[in-house]
Structures are given as C-alpha cells and as structure tokens.
Length: 161
Image (cartoon, rainbow, N blue to C red; front, side):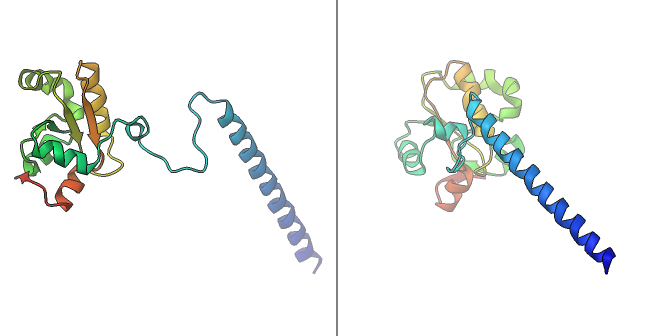
C-alpha cells in the first residue's frame, strides 16, 4: 500500500510541475508576442497576407470584370493543372516557374493591365506569391481571387479544358 501511495505522490508532483512549466511557457510566449514587430493576432481568425492588406477581390467583383473583359486572369497553378482545365481565357504563369515564362507574359500583357491571379484552395499561396512577383515587375493593378479555381467551378463560370 505504501508503494502505491508513493507512486501517487510522485505522479501528482509531476502533474503539478508540468502544469507550472506549461503556464510559464504561455506567459513567456504572450510576453514575447507583445514585443514582436509583426505580432500574431490573438482572438481573431488568421487571414492570408493579401486579405489583410486589401489585395484580394471577391468572386462577384471578379465575375463582373470577367464579363466586361476589364481584367486578365492569371493561373498561378502548375502548367499541368492549367492544361487539365482553367478559367476561360486565362494565362498560365506558374509562380514556381515565374522567371521561365514571364517574358512571354510581358509581351502579351502590358503592365497597366488589371490582373487577377488565382490558384486552388484557401491555403494556396501561389496566387499571392505570383501577385507579389508581378508587382515587383511593375504591374500595379494586381489582385488575388482567393480559392479562385474552386469558387469559379462551383459557380459554374466559364472554363476551358
């Protein structure tokens, strides 16, 4: 019986110490977060950087621009996925192969053109990366349609296969 009492005491001591270590880690983490340049938001939902800075476009706005032919859509997904299907009339400019295909894109699309980049999935960063790369090359009117490929298909908008 004494053996089980010792085990119980040791177990309770270990639980108490683990709890104390966890509490110290949380306090230190919150303290460091307060002094970071780019603090992590507490209590709000995470948004991709482009959403937070207003560089995104809604599906409704993108649809209007598409119908009026006032924007060029650029697919940031791989060439293989683009060849399977894409938004009708879109250009293929994979973010990971930007340097290989940019000159061809530049010849076809002047820098003052309104551009909407897209990829597939809410967590897909390729469209954000592509928008950033295009801005670095002098394209000033670039927006991201977050989860664009999925939204476009779900709403039965024009695609090419």
